[in-house]
Image (cartoon, rainbow over all chains, first blue to last red; front, side, top):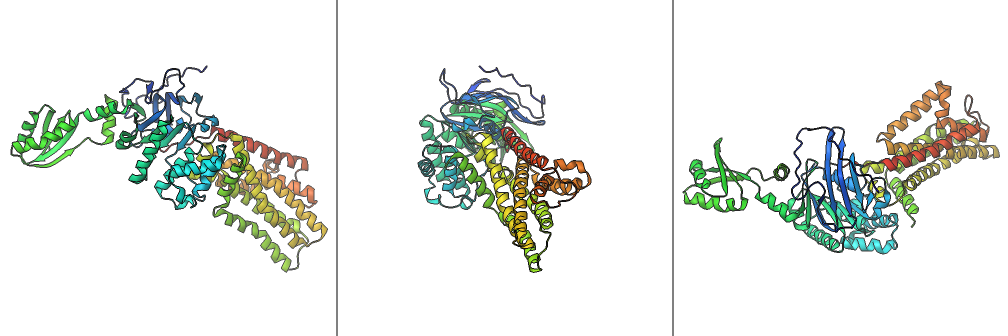
Amino acid sequence: MTTPPTRPTPPVPGWPGAPEHRPVATPAAATAAPVPDGVVPAIQVEHVSRWYGNVVAVNDISFALGPGVTGLLGPNGAGKSTLLHMLSGLLAPSAGIVRIAGRVAFGDPSIYADIGLVPEREAVPGYLTGREFIRLNADLQHVADPTAATDRAIATVELSDAAGRPIRTYSKGMRQRIKLAAALVHDPPILLLDEPFNGMDPRQRLHMMGLLRTMAGEGRSILFSSHILEEVERLADAVLVVYAGRLAASGDFRSIRRLMTDRPHRFTIRSSDDRTLAAALLGHPAVFGAELTDGLLAVRTSDYGAFTRVVAPTAKAAGIRILELRPTDDSLESVFSYLVRR
Amino acid sequence: MTVFGALITVTLRALLGRRRIVLMVVLAALPILVGLVIRLGGGRSDAGDILDALVIRTVLPLIALIIGTAAVGSEIEDGTVLFLLLKPIARWQIALAKVLVAAGLTAVLVVPPILITGLLVGGSGSESIALAFGYAVAAILGGSAYAVAFTVLGIVTSRALIVGLAYTLLWEGVLAGLLVGTRFLSIRQATLGIAAQLTGTDVGVDPLAPVVAIAIVAVVIVGGWSLGVIALRRFQVRAGD
């Protein structure tokens, strides 16, 4: 029996920039990678908040994860690393509870038999060779056959050739891979990865994505953070979108991607005749607003794809030359901000 | 390798694989150098004073400070402590391995200079040998207390080196001489108390009784390790965002 978690009161009510929280796909207790009924979720987060003084890093987040690959998506500073630190028991929540395979994460080292964490920080002892480092991890994890586990983990991340070299000679991508090998050496059912593709070249990135997919297929629960939409799109079955410390959206990636794509977009256009072009574009159903400000034409559209397809033919038909066409709100920040506001 | 063996190995590699070992060896060599100079000048009868001033009051706390604060502190600083914390290992084991390595390494670096310097200064007579061994035993006990205290300091504060220096230079160096009551909070005074008992030398005014001195060392070692366990259990790694 556990005490039901109490819903935290935000430490600084209405702190500057606090967005209204409306999860998109599912309500407060979101389930990104589905957890079958009666099964203890690999990761369970219940109304978790974390603040540092007056700064709120994570605010009232709840979700549960089962097997599969889940992407933790959000811009830099959104609270992804804080959340991953709490999931891996390195940081105590200020409020709420994090459970790993049913056990409270903070203060229980036994969870590390079930977790492999790849931290974002390049915290690898450069004075050890790759093999020494993985072997020590295997010994510290008390695995049955540390030599075989070491070889297997190093081979999995394709570092066998460089395993005899000191880690300080490794490139950033190789360090990422040796950290992954360290996280895999005890064959954990739960993998937490903080920005794992940073510093990897495209081939290594593809290899690691394939690897994570394979491991997810074997029944592991994998959560990785990223601020790059395309990475999450290519790898994750489910997604948790975090923005300004809050869970902005969670669930199936495709439905969230659709929301992102279908959101209102804004373009600025400079042309040979802005006024005529505005009138012509307003005749298109995808365009729902146009205004002339500061010598530029600002157009609002509800359909990004349709607009980009019609803008050039429309201008051509009206005999107008487009000098500049620029999306003004295509940053991830604006995407996340939109998801939170919905 | 056992889990505890791996903990010892990783701590030793971290401490010995860096430039600080050079600094420690230089520090440890200083008393020998002074002893050599004295020997070339014909030797002296007050070897105890030399060991007291050079080793117990200077080299011992400095070496223990460098090793102790680095045993966990440097791993916290560079982030590599994550790879220990992310293991299913009881925190008391991690703390025990750290203080054992810190205390052991301090002894390994301090005992040879004491023995060599003692013999260089006092000659190879049985009295001189007994004196050197007495100081060596006191340094092992006192050095262990210093190493444990500074190891814990390295866990609880990122300014362990400054705090440790302030303790050895200001508290033990100045205050303990002025305020007699502070002797009970001084590892140096406890070490000198043990040395006085073992060697019969005069270590200054009113040395601590041997029982008190050993009790102080024991309290620092056991209490320090316990505090280290608590500090590691409560240790949190703040994320970058």
